[in-house]
Every structure is written in structure tokens, then in C-alpha cells.
Length: 482
Image (cartoon, rainbow, N blue to C red; front, side):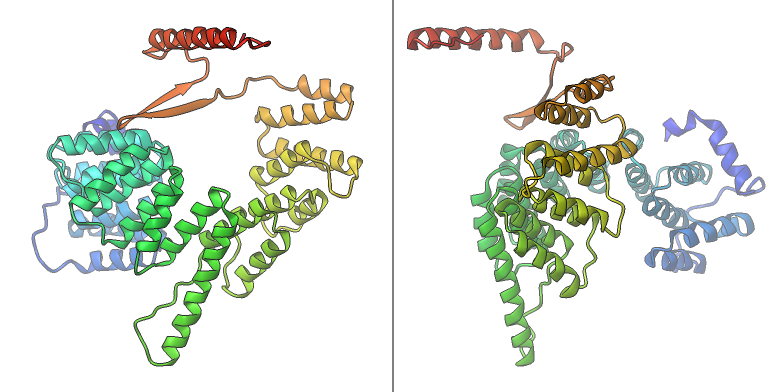
């Protein structure tokens, strides 16, 4: 934990904060029966009462520091992780050093998880680098840290490095790696992992099968995903949801809704079997993510009334409270159907404050189509209100001004168009794309002049341009490529 030693004042502040100036170095506890204080910390943690965990830990530190062992710190660190509290997490890190518990692997892993949960993936990696004997759990923790912090490319690099260091992944590690493949669309790597799963005989694990279905769906191989789904004998809610969402994401609304109907029919049969005294069948009730897929499918298919029915069913039949994403799906459903006024009124009646995504969905729909009622003036008013709300939520988002500018231009309102265009004071974030080369993911950013392979990239582009121009000339194309 050398990187934390660079800040010695932090350790002193922690010591002063918890009044432990006369505290002796704690020794490693080897007894089998955990102290009552640890049982109390564990009980608070199991009930997700993180504030009580940390409060009780502080009391122990002030009044009975000799009762604190490595497990006490682990419980406190887990509370910081659940709470996503970086300040308290760093205080615990300093205490780990002060107590001399640095070499304990489960504390090192807990620190990786804590830094990951607070968004400090660099500190999580520093913690990982300082572990002299890295085991499977520490490798899995740092890979998960990158996946959880939206850096799947780095996660896959570490997954490959782990195997090069002769550490064999287990089911948890492979599941995390498949999640990274799904986020990246890294099909080749996902297929390699699938082959590894079959080779290790792990393909009977339901959790892994669910991850494979999700990976293939998000990588565009919806047919492979469906074959895996159909071949899974015992399906849980994640199995059904992954496939329903997969079909919905690929615009296969009919398949998604049919699958949801089959899921409900399966539950009816399970209820009937239970009434007949059979205990093998179990109910698989849809969750909030399942309904996300169902609403997306209705949106893609333009099934407004069916979407409304499913939205009501979510609350009335399954007692699921809609989240902001479900309200967003309903707004998208209405907007795609051209019901902009109804979408606007739906937003105003939402029990939660609409976020930028909801308002931007409405704004984008206004720019693409008029209200189905044919009221152009109403369309402009709705757009203006959506933009006003977005200025409060995300004032620096340039794309919103561009949409309003184009809308005013389409209506011939040139003065307002120029006024909005003059408000654009910054460039949009450059576009980014990625390609999969073997098992590596290469990322490219628009107008990037710092890429290490820039000369080779432009050489190939120049060759492609000349080839296409020659092809245009040979075909006698009237509008050769510029």
C-alpha cells in the first residue's frame, strides 16, 4: 500500500479523528470464535445498515481498540463500499496500515472493491499492483473494477494477462469477462470464452448460460443467443429477461412479446402444478428489467395501446414500481407514434422528476416529425419547453442547440435559428469507434492526430480512396468520389 504512504498526513488525521494515539498495534487474530463486536458489525452489514456499521466501528476504535482485528476492518470496508464513501474508505485504508494488516489478502481485495465502488479505478489498480502474490479473487476484483467503471477494454486486457500468469479463471471471472465482451461487442473474444467454458465443462452453469445469451445478443448474434436460450432446460428470470431484451434491442418486437407471453404461460402452468401438489415447478416472475425489454419492443413495433397495458400491468399485477427508465420507454413509445402532445403531458404527470434523457427523447422526436394532430405551433412550443428543461439539467450539451437550430430552420424562423446557433460556444465531443482485431479491441477517435499508427492508417485510407476513384472512373460514374 505504498501509494497511500505518499500521504502521511492522512494517517495522522485518521488517528486524531478516532482518538487512537495510545492504541497498540493489533495482532492477527487466530482464534476460531469471532469476537462479539465482529458479530455485531456483521449483523448490521447483513441488514445493509452501513451507517450503524461505521458508527459502531468508531466506538470500538475509541473505547476498545484491542478488540479490532482484520475482520472488523473488512466489515467496515464493506460498509464503505456499499455506501460508496471514498473519504471513509481512505480512512479505513490508513487504519489497515496503522494496524499492520497490509499483507492480508482479503483486506487487499476489499480495498480494491472499495476504490472501484467509489469510481477510483486507478487507486483500485494501484492497490492490485501492490499485492505480491495475486490470487484468483484479487484478479477478479480488479477486472470487475474496470467493467463496473465502463472500461471493458482494459478489463479484457487484464483477463488475458491473468491467464498468461497461469491463473485459471473460475465461473465468476468468466461471467465478468463476458459482461465486458457484451459492452464492447467483442464477439471473437466472447466466442473464445464460450469455447473455454465448454472445454472446462462449465456450460451447465445457469449463470454462465445467462451471460452467454446476453453477450451474443449484444454482439449481434441473436440467432446464437436464441439457440442457447432454447437449449437451457431450467430458466430463471435472468434467462427470460436476457432473451426478451435481446430481441427488443434487435427490433424483433414480435419475438420479444411472444417470449413474454410464453413466460407468463409458464408461470400459469407452475401455479397449476403447485395446486396439484407438484413441487418441482417454480414461478419465474418478470422483474423491472423484463418490462424494460417489453416496453422497448412495443416502442419499436408502434404498439401504443399494448405498451400502455404492460406499463399498467407492471404496477397492478406485479407490484413493481416503475423507474425513470420505464417512464423514458413510455415517452419513446408515444414519440415514435407521433403523439408528441400526449408524450409531453405524460412527462408532466410523472411522479419522479424527468431527467435529461426523457426531455431529449421528446426534443429529438419534435425535430424528426410533427405532432400527429397536425398542430405545428404546438410542436414548436413543446420543443421550446423541452429545451428549457434541458438547459437547467445539462446546459453544456451542444446537441440540443443543434436540434433546435435545425427545427427553427425547417420552420423558416431564421432569427431564432441564428440566436440558438450563436449560443453554441463549444464543440461536440468527438465521435469514437472501435474494431475487434483478433482478441484485441482497437479504439479510434475522430480527428485524432496522436494515434501511434496514424501514418499507416492514413496510408491505407489514401489507398482505399484511390481504389474507389478508379472504380468510379471504370464504371463511368457521373459523380466521382471527392
